[in-house]
Length: 256
Ligand code: DAK
Image (cartoon, rainbow, N blue to C red; front, top):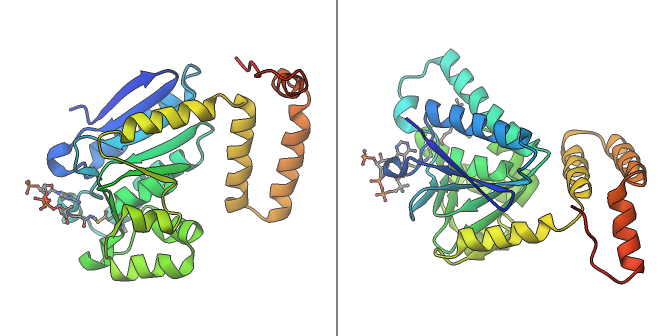
């Protein structure tokens, strides 16, 4: 069964999780299909950005599928954790912009998938939580590592230890989301925002993603070196020449 719907609009690929009846909870099939769809979109030269969202009006992703977790032993649980971490690493390390359009519940593994995205926009009815402790679990798809880097240690601890949900306004006040739109307009607004970003230099966008990722995964000195090298390299590109020339000539740059 196809769990991921993929459509392309103006160089932007929208990946929709199609498990509405289970509030888009992630079972093995959904995890594998989303990872495959992401890898395909990242390789596809006609695609410049990816939006992940959930089907229906109620839920982005209500977490890992609790029903399959009932049968996990230690070995299978480790593999299940690695499978989800693999997916969230694919998102975070993507050379193309990945945005979460959070259209409802982003719980447990669903919150963790959104945390791996470069940007997160929420609908007014969105709710975020890491409720794993309520099931006697801890987050297993990167939540303990990414959440503190986004909202700070103190609030990450509060979310992970309490397991309580927060609404989109609270998420915005914490910097957990980049913006809020009405339930009806979320996807369109995210598309418009993405379009605006894609008007900027494509290589500059890719290098920015890479450098910021470095700030998370490596020592500052190494990140600084990468930044200096990519900054210097851009001066060999038509893109940088066009951007600077267009500014001086008082016109809009043409990057395509
Ligand atoms: N898994 C499976 N099914 C789910 C689900 C989930 N996470 N969430 C919802 N569903 C299903 C419900 O079972 C129900 O199915 P039927 O009973 O109709 O067959 C259907 O979706 C509609 O749900 P409700 O009837 O419950 O709808 P309500 O509006 O009343 O409530 C709710 C919505 C989101 C508040 C409620 O469904 C809920 O509390 N769901 C569970 C949310 C949750 O706890 N999510 C976090 C899951 S834990 C690890 C690896 C991974 C993880 C941890 C560790 N390692 C290996 C170490 C990840 C953990 C998680 O994500």
